Image (cartoon, rainbow, N blue to C red; front, side):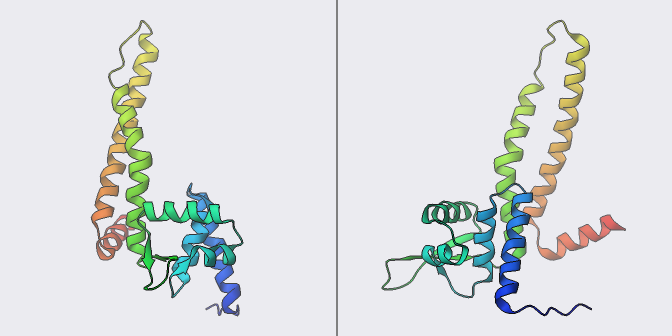
Length: 173
């Protein structure tokens, strides 16, 4: 068993950097993922100024990425009585975060692709029978695959941790 010998600040920086790298590998903005990591770790709501100072980023960068996190439904705004400043809090339930990110990625990426593939199914033969048939075959395969992925994501979005874990473990057997 490995024992972590990092102090809190080093561990926090490592987590924020790792989460940022993971986010960029998954196709999201690295800074957005780092802000999300910072908010996940924070026991208190943070202001834009807190985020800017902690991550050494501009106000515009902080504001734009916080708004995107709010749009994705994984960060919410919190107002403190008597203060004009806005504060932000991340949803801490990682399963809920995963479901919301899945729903947003599905809406932004998978659904438009499925719509385009659906329109391509109506392709008419323009005299290039061989090429058209190959395109139609690929479109049908992509349509079937994306439909299966879509169904799986819908089930995941509606699932709870126990259902997902049981289902995933069955797949591994």
